[in-house]
Amino acid sequence: MSHTVYDEIPNLSIREMLILKLLSESGETYGLDMVKQSGGRLKRGTIYVTLDRMEDKGLIESKLEQLKSDKGGPTRRLYSITGHGARILAVWERPLVIGNAMGETTA
Amino acid sequence: MRLFAAIIRMSARVGEPIARSRVARIVFALGVVCAAYLSWRSVVLMPSAVIGKVLLLIPTIGLTGQAVFVIWGCFQPVLPSTEEFVLPRIFREFLQNGENRIAKPPVLFRLKKIFRALYGTKTWERVFAEQFTDAEIEYLEAEKDKRLLIARWVCMRTYWTLTATVFKHVFEKVRRFWKMTH
Image (tube, rainbow over all chains, first blue to last red; front, side):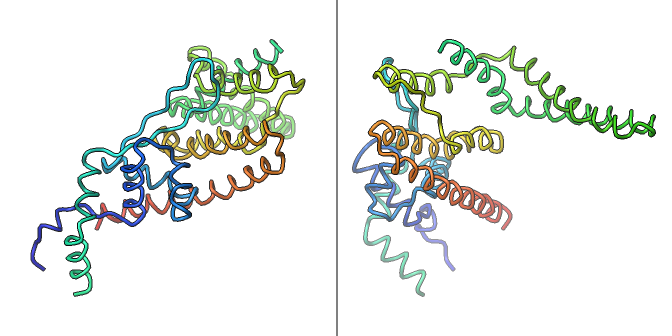
């Protein structure tokens, strides 16, 4: 099979694309919020492993939330999309790419 | 109450560095192995007192472990997790609101130490710590609103999600290894 420009684009699973989409829409958010926003498509038991993988790929970044000094309690991790992640999401959302990728897989 | 706080601080000073540091875990394991070996040698030298030596083995291992815990812990700073998260939560939200009781955390949250010891820092912080944090927040909010059944449900659900996360994590590791080697 010949080398195409689409081979250069990193693959995104459906869950990864959904997470990128949620992050691009809502900015910084928590893992649990993403589970709630996804309407059941993301699961509590698997989201953090997926987020870990995406962070390794450079698609998203995370930081611990800053609590006010008078407020105790556990700190959660805030996730946000990186520029690299936003570009890849934009590429994968283009119908041409999706159409071509589907054509290649069905061929 | 000060005594209670002091006990929590002391256990944090001693236990947490061991749980977080890989070197400390190795030192701890070596200490236990050395104690077991020395005890076993003494059994071999004097086989007539086997039962006594076996009985000696148990406290020797325990004391060696504790000694390593304490010595190592003395040189470590207190990590912020216990003091910043647990104490303020208990004292501010339950005691200062006029409720004369201390909320004992369920068994689930004691699993944190096991997970922290089993997994590396990166996996712990990015994957399992987040699971526990979500569960803690939901649990404490339910407790605060006196919705005890919801609190129990949060714990049960967290057992399930932790199990699913462990399996997913193993699957992910295998997948990455497969991709690297093929």
